[in-house]
Image (tube, rainbow, N blue to C red):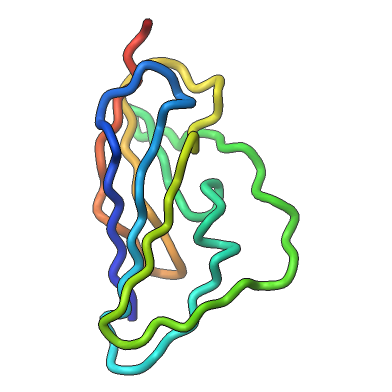
Length: 117
């Protein structure tokens, strides 16, 4: 069982390339669990992003899948996943909501705004 969190480095940015957040995966179960870092470190697989109207943002394609890169999280332990420049450069100014996803777990939404320069 997982608990997910996402924390933005800044909730207002000047350019899409400035987007930065840290995802947190916590094993809230009583047994160790395997987590696939290939999925969790790819923004297009791990992040759900919608605009102010709820329309999903089209992300860049994920990397070509290779072998899974799994780690084991002991009960109560956590792993932080840094996301830097995760928005496509063509993302227009405006308000967005972002959340982390892994398997069936979802983090709460966070708000992110790109201000026009």
